[in-house]
Length: 127
Image 1 (cartoon, rainbow, N blue to C red):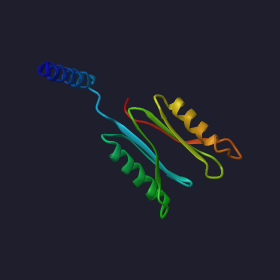
Image 2 (cartoon, one colour):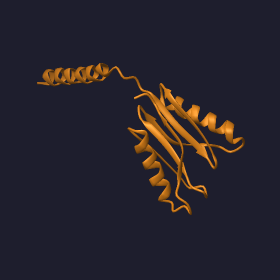
Image 3 (cartoon, rainbow, N blue to C red):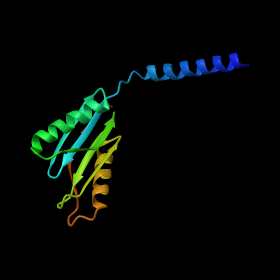
């Protein structure tokens, strides 16, 4: 009975690996980083860490001495960052640019800015 369980687990594991391998889709990460008034983004990178580091480097370079923060990371999807007029922000990822925009604006507006939030960056990573 133990042999059957082990064989069954091995077969299930092979099926899972095969199903994943059949997709032929390698990760394609993107990220958005920001700090008050500045942002950076990256897309189509092989790992989340690479996307986050690239977005942070771009943002930090633009912002000077300010330290940027990763707001959203996404794999084979779209990300958006929206900001308000007094530093409010929202970030979201979704399957489409429009859905990512809607999520980011909705999150930002949830912080009750004096004026409606606006999308400042929207980027998609290979889908």
